[in-house]
Image (cartoon, rainbow, N blue to C red; front, side):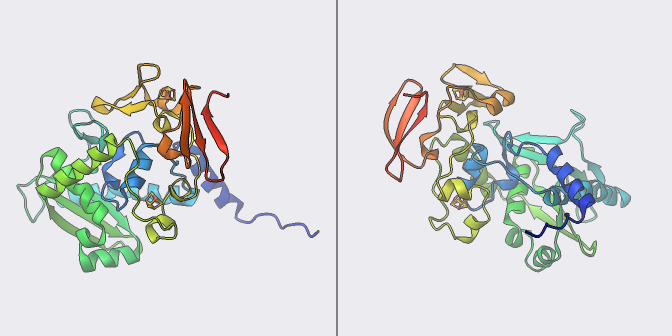
Length: 309
Ligand code: SF4
Ligand code: SF4
C-alpha cells in the first residue's frame, strides 16, 4: 500500500484545532434573541433543550470571532463622529443583558447610542453585523427586514425589552469594508409576537411541529438537529433532555425527580436517574415504571430507557 503523504498546512490546522479546543461546549444557557426569528420552532426548541451541540469547525469559530472583534471598531467609528455609545451597561460594567419575563429568553445588546446625525436626541439599540459580499449586496438591495429577518427580529426583541423605539443597524462588507446603515422602528406587535413565540417554546413540553417532514427540505439540510429530527438519533443525556426537568421562573430549572433547583453545571452533568423526554425517542412508549420507560422502536425491537430490567 502506498503511504499517505503527511498532512499539509500543519500550522493552520493547529490554529483551527486550538479554536475548537477553546470553544464552549455548544450548549447555550438561555434561548437567544438572535435565533427567535428562525423559521422552524422545533429547531429553536431543540436548541433550548440541548438536543444537539452546536459544533463548529475551527475555521467557523474564527469567523465568529471576526464578527465579535468588529464590534469594537463599529463603536470606535461611531465615537469618532461624536456619537455617544454605551457598549457596556453602566449599572453593571458588563455587557447589556436583556431577559423576558420567564428569564429564559433574551440576549446581549451590542450597545445603545445617542447622537446619531439622523436623530441626535433619540436613543437607539445598536446591532453590529459583518456580512459576506453576497449577503451585503442583498442587504443594500432589500434592507434588513427582507434580507436578514432574523437580525430584524433580534432588534425588535431588544427594543421591546429595553423600552426603546429605535434601533440602528450598522453592517460591514467583509470584502470591501463598505458600511451599510439602517434605522429600524420598533414594531410593537412584532415584538409582542416574538416574545410570545419565545415563551411558547420555553414552556413547550413537546417539540413544536417541524417546518417540513421532508429531510431534504433546504432548511432541514442546514439544521444542526437534522440527525435527531429526521434520522432517529438519540440526544445526549443531561437535564435539558430529561423528562423530569422543567424551566421555571427567573430563568431557573427544576428537577421533579430530586425536587431541587438545577444549576447550569448540574444540568450539564445530569444524573443516573435521567430519562429521555419521550418525544426525543423515535419509538412508541409501551410501559413505564420507577426510573424506567420502555419503547417499541421503528425496527420492532423493545428498548428500555433508565434502570436495567
Ligand atoms: S431538521 Fe428541519 S424540521 Fe427538524 S428541527 Fe431542523 S429545520 Fe426543523
Ligand atoms: S433526574 Fe437527573 S438528569 Fe433528570 S432532571 Fe433530575 S437531576 Fe437532571
